[in-house]
Length: 368
Image (cartoon, rainbow, N blue to C red; front, side, top):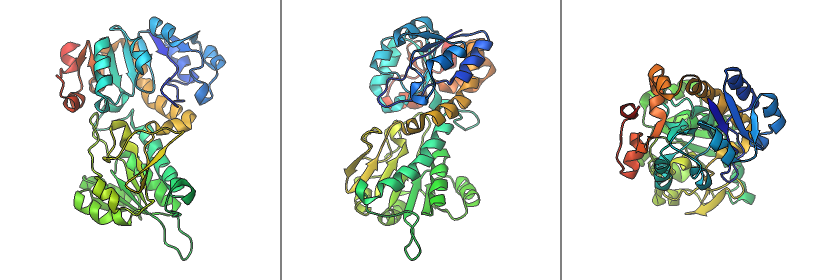
């Protein structure tokens, strides 16, 4: 199969979908890998590294899309990339379609097969999303602690405290992969940490896995009791493939201390606060209802080399499977791959996305 790796063009996206080692493996399997020049520079991979791995270097994205059947990316296609997609293409990347009707309809219009990392589910896990959730969760505690500094607009709270001064208080909404990683780092810093979730078994697990972390059932009443005392609020809620629920109202934000910080990891799926809007690494925060909002839509991109390796560790087996056998056979041998298919032959094949935009849904296996 001809596999394409274009350079990411979303603002401030410095990850690349494959490191040279993964390219070398695909070449050894008999595939041709087309890499756009400069694709790996943001993650400290040089064109020469890809050339040594056996890739064919091409001048621009247009050449990569024209020559490839399987396009492997990191972020959702931008407008210029949508124009390059054809019905013969299989696009394998993060999509987050529930947050954008325009992108959804744009992808449908191309007729391509679009497979989303974030909806591919195996045994109730999202294995392709988990590595980025781990990074985003760990980052959330670090960037939240940083933006609590007075010079960043925060209320001047050191999360660790010092002898004679109590620790800062952190609340994490969601005890999944991102949430547990956020709680782990916040606890390691020395903060007073509470995790809210709706799954009692998950809270039992957190109680055992992170001694010192408190748990509470996630509902409006508990949020109303907790948030007036919180210095750092981390939104780590996830409904696979669907828009994030708006759990944080303006009233709840107004109840938080002035200069407290919200880090909304769920921003890719629309965010869990009514005030959430995407920001960038260059301009990561804004003030709303007296609360500093950090809502960077590609948080792991800040640590691009680590993120590239971690993402590829999870995606590469699926990329190899599709390349080796073709999509139809891959879905037959590994049915969970069907959960990743969001668009196919101009039809929407992910129910949560269809529900989010009130569009018709067709099961992918009916088309394949």
